Image (cartoon, rainbow, N blue to C red):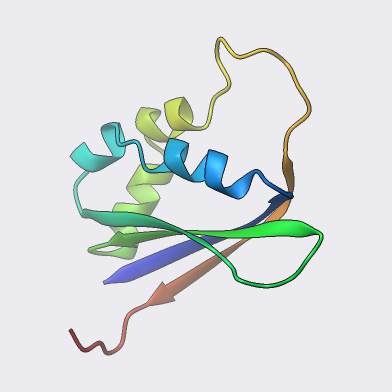
Length: 103
């Protein structure tokens, strides 16, 4: 199992708005090796919101196939949207192989 977390800092009040868009489904669900996606809002008293967008994949190769797919490009495009200031302040990608787990 391979887990990728996109740690995103956004302007205060935007985490919940963005989360529902991330998990609305789409072509990612059709990709080989995709397991699930979750969005977490970090519980800290900051002047911005922290979101962790976590995706689970069967393998690193499956994740890399997502990155190079048309589905990825479509999911991350802003086609048809008005140009407005992005609520995203910054982000960091963290990738990990699952070594052990307990259900």
